[in-house]
Image (cartoon, rainbow, N blue to C red):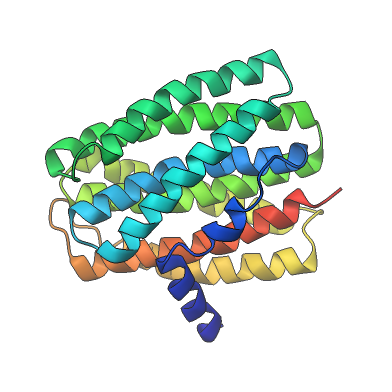
Length: 264
């Protein structure tokens, strides 16, 4: 397990797991649509995390690469999801998301990350997240299958891993510190609850449960790192632990979500 975790760290640090994901040029089916829609939620928070990290010089090289890859992947998946939208209502959601995304992207790349702009980035990330979540829920409802629900729930765990890290880094930078600490705690509770539901789901195969066990062990370390939070007093080493552990959890949960998406 230790060797595997080190491999995850090396890959996640370079954003390498995004490369095969981005290689799929179009939505394959409804479960794939739910997977990609849910990944947009995650990317909204991952980009906020990398913005906070770059601004505080935390894992700077990795954060720069991850931000660039995440921007490109969000753009690509948005095009795919707009093209796939099976109903006018879902199409309208992705039209609204496109507008919110343009504002968010300008905030992310229009100037170098700065403490004075970080609150705006957090707020815009929330707007993009809300619309991305709306689209994911609509696609799950359109699916009407148990597998769609599990793809949504598992995919949301990816987002929560990044949301916890983003708000940790925001609070440690003194940006909306009280609110960010509260959001971090809320996301942690939601992650733990959903993890239990996934473990106990009848559809979860032995292979899926094995991956979820790995996530559980990583989440234990993650929670310890999160509890080191000192609002307004960033510790680069502690921030680095939060950043890298969130990446390891993300990579495993992205794989798990893909496994659920292949269920009949």
